[in-house]
Length: 212
Ligand SMILES: Cc1cc2nc3c(=O)[nH]c(=O)nc-3n(C[C@H](O)[C@H](O)[C@H](O)COP(=O)(O)O)c2cc1C
Image 1 (spheres, rainbow, N blue to C red):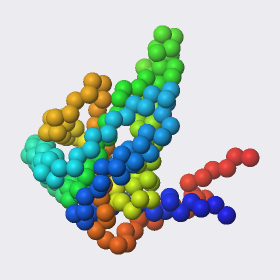
Image 2 (image 1 turned 60 degrees about the horizontal axis):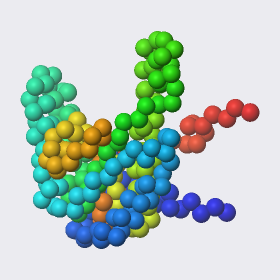
Image 3 (image 1 turned 45 degrees about the horizontal axis):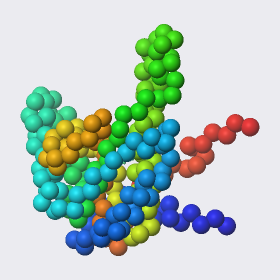
Image 4 (image 1 turned 90 degrees about the horizontal axis):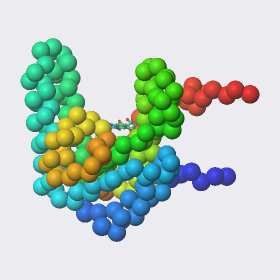
């Protein structure tokens, strides 16, 4: 009845062929991202596209170095080992021909300033900030990017693992935009494997509550 098959084409892809992604495809993908909804239509996103394999390697190296620097300061061996081993997932972008870094601009939620002026308790202000409305819009853009990419035959993977090295990554690529910070990145390329599977999902009855 409804054709929602495009939704199910998206999977997290972590291995890629060397095939370059043409710029016109990348532009179409970013354009699709920009058609996501955003609070107050702020469009508080910025996408940095890296097509340079050497620079992608440098980003990976930057993350590895920061991972090591943090791990070296951790005394608990279990925590240290888990963090060090997690690098595999933090670097899942490494062998892609293109990486898109997603930056989010500051966004003040509706009612925040007013609640503050009205003398609301800190707890209430923090709870409102925790809803991260600014990040919600940028997340919608990321999902648009991923669904469009999958529909065009490309693989992506939403990656936030390396964001602890946000400052260093931005320095490595030489990107700075006032008020914007790195929130995620995704590799983009032709998947290496013909078939990629996603982990199973919780059944709808478990994740949905209907109140009549
Ligand atoms: C906010 C967010 C952060 C994620 N961070 C990572 C990451 O750092 N590394 C990684 O390999 N996958 C990461 N993923 C991908 C998830 O592991 C993946 O979406 C999940 O296992 C479901 O699989 P699927 O995307 O194939 O449906 C992230 C996904 C989201 C939404």
